[in-house]
Structures are given as C-alpha cells and as structure tokens.
Image (cartoon, rainbow, N blue to C red; front, side, top):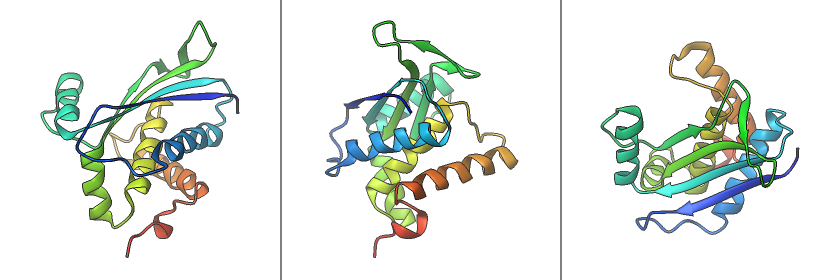
Length: 164
C-alpha cells in the first residue's frame, strides 16, 4: 500500500483521549486499506467530537434527531475519489467519532476505549470505501466479517480486548 495521511482533529473537551490513540487509529486506517487492497495514496480526516456535536451533524446530514457513535462522510462513489492536486492522494472522506458515545459503548461491551475507537474507525473507513449495512442481511454480515478480520489483524479481536 502507498502512503496514507490521516488528519486528526479533536473538537471535544469531554474525554481525554488515551495515550497512543492517534497512532492506533492511523494503524487502523492503514489496515483497512491494506485488507481492501486499496493501493493508491490516500487521505482521510478523523474528528473527535462530543455527543452534542454529533447529534447536530446527524440531524443536519441524515435527518436523524439523535446522537450516534460515528458518522462517515465519503468523498467518493463507486471507487472514484477526488484527488488532492498537491499530493495526488485520493481523498476518501471524513470520519467523525463521538468520544462520549465510544466511552459508553466500551463500558457496555466490556472492552477498552481504544478498542472501541479502533472499531468505530474501521467501521467508518469501510463506509468510506463503499460498504453499507443499512439493509442488513448478507451485506451487513459481510461488513462485520471484514471489521473483525481487520481488528484481529491489529491484535484487537473481540476476545482479546475485554476489560476485567
């Protein structure tokens, strides 16, 4: 795989991100592209927000008046992406994660916050590459299998990341 640029923006004050989070999420983004055989140079934006901010984005862009854990804003369709004229990198889009929501889900599922943030990043990156699970069925199952395979490759399998 060629070069990947991940641009992080922490726009929330509610939760201090664990040490190593940015490095882990950069690895997660790279792992998705490697798994999916995406060989072009790429750029992705990852923003950390609070529940109120993601609620606003969800209402504005999806017409859903509720908070959520992660939103994906792809810049491509059917494998065609805008290209950054300065770098030649494919601009995949934006990943927006509610850190507050991630904290609650990590507690609910009994694993670390970093595992939850990595899962949300992998999930969102797959959306940026065209995967969808809204209709359920085989499409959702296929996406979930890819998520778990990628996370396992990062040493973050479901079984290995539970907190005692």
